[in-house]
Length: 437
Image (cartoon, rainbow, N blue to C red; front, side):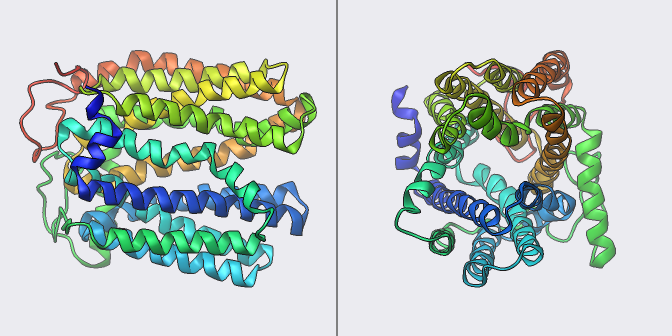
């Protein structure tokens, strides 16, 4: 079955290979761009609050528009949506690079770019089931994760290395170029027409039948329908609430790790970068392992394992006595992130109707982004009041408690989910809680 891994899937499916390459280039460039923006913000404004505001603008602001962001890919050709989003993001980053604006304008531009990215993400996730067979979804999602999220392990190091020759402005222009190349690849994909032209999906109807809705009132109705569907579906509601809880507890690690590495473990800037790279290396390994599977996975257990392992990684990191131990435990955390990423994406692609898939992805990850923003604020307060060790241990312990609750709720909800597949998928005889043989 080794031939059915990432390389085999990419060789056999040219259209998916172009999507994979476009997302890899764009994500790598954006990761380098984020490093450049954080360095620019810290150097020019000299404030931890300024850096926190930058992260909030990128993570929290798009969540406000998530009910509408997914509608774009539900109504329009996903290929056009993705290509246009990449071009617009590239234009915004080029403005930032050339102007290097003050903090208020910088936050506005970063927030706008993040909102455009919030339109791109559900479109790209909803495109995957149109480019690969249902049986290949696990491997396809793992392949994308291997190429994109795995960059978390290398982009910070690459950005730091490039700064020896390039300025912050140059790094941002590199990011702009990756958006342009990505758009050029995406326009070569086959057309992926709207899945719900001129009709509204009733939130409680998996088949998506409902009265027509046009105009501004129709857009609001579509947005409400997407939110209502996510809430009324038992499995999706539980996944959203538990994942938000895990992120609420654990996202503070982005803030705490640098203090753990520098102050508690007395490491250098390079050592702190290495600790941050640990999660990316773990994700790379996790996605690689999941991409090599030749069979459908038991997705609900995979998600629960992901919650538990990523939380355990943070808890253990809080106990680390040396930099190498912190790096190792962050690799463990990365393995958990890979599991929950593949589990969530594949599960949603299998159980959500095509006409609601864009909005479901947008609302699901929008809620998670909001939870991350809240975690930055309250987790930062806990960090200031205690220590990096206490913050990470508390975060991991609470995340494990949420994972224990998920172990009871998620598989049961999956078993109760009727059918478990979208209506336009080939017939399947198994529920989402089973492993195909």
